[in-house]
Length: 195
Image 1: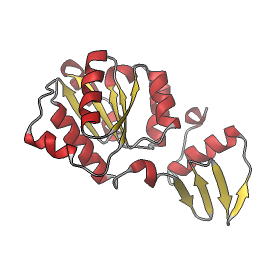
Image 2: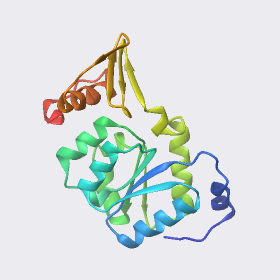
Image 3: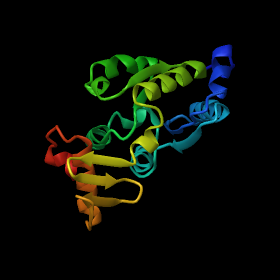
Image 4: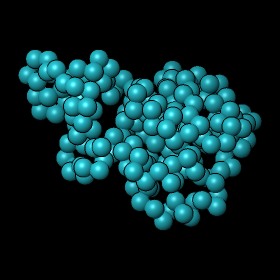
């Protein structure tokens, strides 16, 4: 991957809308290259090197965009369904060139916002991140503080649930289930995704 800065890359450094980006990458050199480019552009980077770290960061931190290595998740069928059902932040998958064909044969492309094949330039990745952020309404972490369905409100930061302005006490499991259901209020959720 190329780390050279073009004029297009320098334009990213002047952005005022800095983001928190989850970078889930199996290759340490690639992870450091991506982190350096994003930090140079003024973004905060949360790094994950395993699938369990990826899930933990994605669920428990305000993430604006997730850049996830296809190799980390390819064999994680059950948990990958969970992460895509929750859809807390736009997702860009990265793949090795020889994995791209396999990715294209999966249904994952319907669940992610973009993908990019390695090797790629950091400028190209920064442009794609900016594009998915714009499509998804800017800073996703602040936009996702509250989920509202009818009279029901769920505050992700305070972990509070309100119905008609009254706070409702829930167990952690009840809260997690409600949060998952509210993120896709018009879609049925299979019980395997809830456990």
